[in-house]
Amino acid sequence: MTDHFNAFEMSPVPDGPDAVAPDPFLGIYAMPMFVKIPTRDLHTSTDFWVRGLGFVDFFTIPGQIVHLRRWAFQDVLLVPVDDDAALSADPAAATIQVFVSCVLSQLESVANACRELSPDSVTGPYDTAWRTRDISIVTPEGAHVTFTAATPFTPDSDVGRDFASVGIFAPDDSEGRAQ
Image (tube, rainbow, N blue to C red):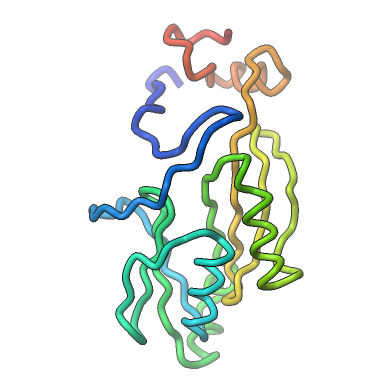
């Protein structure tokens, strides 16, 4: 991993246990990546993504597409599909997985908002081996959305040592050594 370097300054994801989530990003840019999700009910899906997951309706072409966004580079396109055959013809459509970065303080409110809209839609929160706390949500169109927030990084913890053993060091260590 000697060719890798820290580039946290270019990420829209805030870091640290007291990080504050940025407002939705409303600028126009060439999207470096986005997710397109087919849905039988554009209105219900849009409502869930906006009120439950905290996206904004960036723009809509009625009956054709809803472009949703949270932070910079978190773009989702909802597109209508009229029949079950269109969804069942593509098995991947039923197992779409999207991972969305957030901050720790957002997990509870997102989980609660989604549970209000669909009581059995949320699993978690749960901690991962790569120092995140996550919640998993199943949306009305069947997409599996995981909101993932970094937990505090402790270089001398088991996780910190595991990271260092594969060449991943603390973000502020400019010499590439674990702190």
